[in-house]
Image 1 (cartoon, one colour):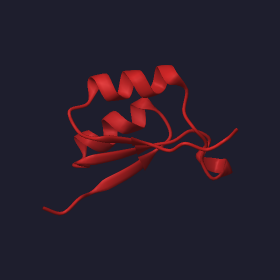
Image 2 (cartoon, helix red, strand yellow; image 1 turned 90 degrees about the vertical axis):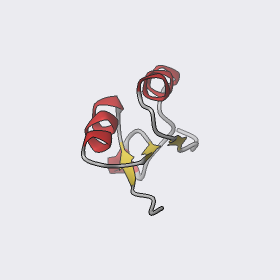
Image 3 (cartoon, helix red, strand yellow; image 1 turned 120 degrees about the vertical axis):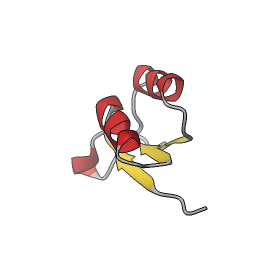
Image 4 (tube, one colour; image 1 turned 180 degrees about the horizontal axis):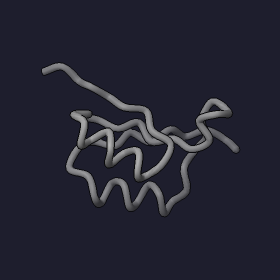
Length: 61
């Protein structure tokens, strides 16, 4: 199976990517600054609401 991973900057982008066929999400924040760790709330909501794997980028702010 081919993995189509979408790098997204928030929950709404994650939902949109899943609707468009992504089968894995790379969840980030502040993509304009090369990506930082998203908030706990964003991580929790995204993981709970989507039925596909969510990989969270962990970087210091």
